[in-house]
Image (cartoon, rainbow over all chains, first blue to last red; front, side, top):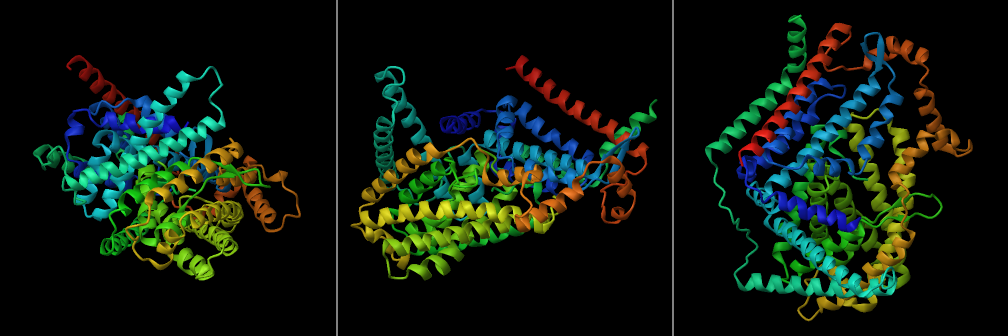
Length: 267
Length: 345
């Protein structure tokens, strides 16, 4: 399970190397848009359900334009720690007042607020994962630094991130080597495991220190240099303006209700 | 006990983000004043260590629930509060971005709950106050135990307060706190014991390392980072080996407390406060439609705040149709873009 989670990180990183319209956007713009998206979604009142639905447009656009596999992200979202579910499920029990009446079938306020919590959960977690999948973590860090995050913290993030990758690749190689030298379950025991992990840990630390020394000797001053020069382009401005306007309209106007009434009026 | 975006209001999330950012900036400035080069890889490795440790669940004796280590106290003792806070924040940030644990708005709350209390309240006022210069294993164990409990209680209480201030959950303060605090008492004790074990190990292997945290002096050049790391390696192996034997598929502490409430009728009557709280929840949760729906029209109607008036069925039907329209068109748009992209590579 641990390996799976780490491999997931690697896959997210692989996805972020694609070259699509979404990937080419400036990380600062994407980060700001994602934060604004989360804030807008979360700012909806407790009993809002319909107003949240148009917001699925943004993850869907990221998925399709950014060429991100839906199944992978959905799986990740479903395995996220179920705190929202466990707290939210109390609402239907504590709040049994009728909020809506659908063709005579009463729906309690608790279920409405629970549904609202779950929709917000889906939207916010998906957007966070999509941000990394389309921007890459170093890109996000770069954006964070540009937006005023302390340099030391940003380099700590990058170091931690790199260690995780180094550790994964090394671990997978060592596990494969052990498997090739052992028959069935023999060799997979505790003693082999401990010495394996021990060697692995020391090796990765030594490697990390070497990397750091090498970076120092090449003039690493704690400042990050993006390989891709980021420039605020017209498409960035267009993206920022569109999303900003869309968030504002969808937050303040009852688009879904209007659409429904329009549709009903046609018949 | 990661707080999540869905339960937060923007005001609460934003406030805690502001607080967290201020502490982050303060720590960065403090560290820059006296940063030893060796601290940079050390902080990175310890971050990875905490990262790994947090994935191991262990059973808390007597409750049947399981928890994982926060690790904030270990970091504070080894690295001092400033570096510890940065490492803790970086671990939580990676979790938020890659595993969507909590979410980006809740990240501010999570860093606050797991970082600020252990590094800046419990570490200086509980751990340091207890240990002072009487650095013997017994004292360290006591101090780590007390601080583990204190840090977890503060963190859990903070989650309760943040949830209630946000007003997305209907859980009343009393019963929510009564669920969270006892469960995190168990987790805190377990956390304290493990913290004590690690600190005592470091103390025997490299006592001068601990002095760094206690006096906030920079690491001197001749301190072998490697030997300290070997110590951590052994601690990692021990926690990996021993604790994963205890590791269970049982739910996390928090989830366990929820489950207990959900089938609360299984609890014995004499269990004092919790039982009473559970009973009051049960009284409110009975699903008998007659009871619930009659109540709906009556006394409870006043404090309900629907976002858009939806009392008349017509409005809710148009909302429903609009929703269906929006969802299908969004889905079709996505599929169409995908299909177009496939055709023209």
